[in-house]
Length: 117
Image 1: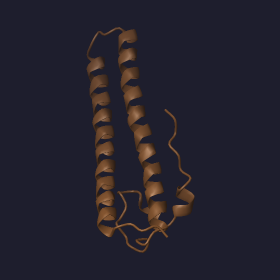
Image 2 (image 1 turned 30 degrees about the vertical axis):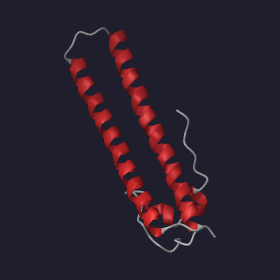
Image 3 (image 1 turned 180 degrees about the horizontal axis):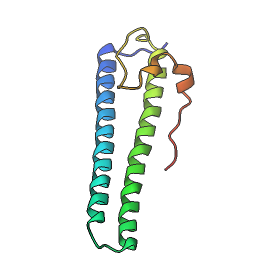
């Protein structure tokens, strides 16, 4: 059995929740920017090649944020699996919003991997 200090586990859980919130905020900001760019393009005379390059670049950036989010899901699954094999297994630190399913499905989730960009 792994031995983990409860205080350290609480700090990791809190930082994990903050990281997920930050990733989601970045995704929201990027998608709002995409909408604003499209609205601005509709009122401009920018050639389609230039607007396509711009939108493609923005889409690539959003895809990278999504890949980072997928990697975070994998990290959380690994953290959950480690916790489940430790002295703090019965302790609940909560899950980042929307990830509560991990507590009950540790075995299935442990095999989650990030999707390549």
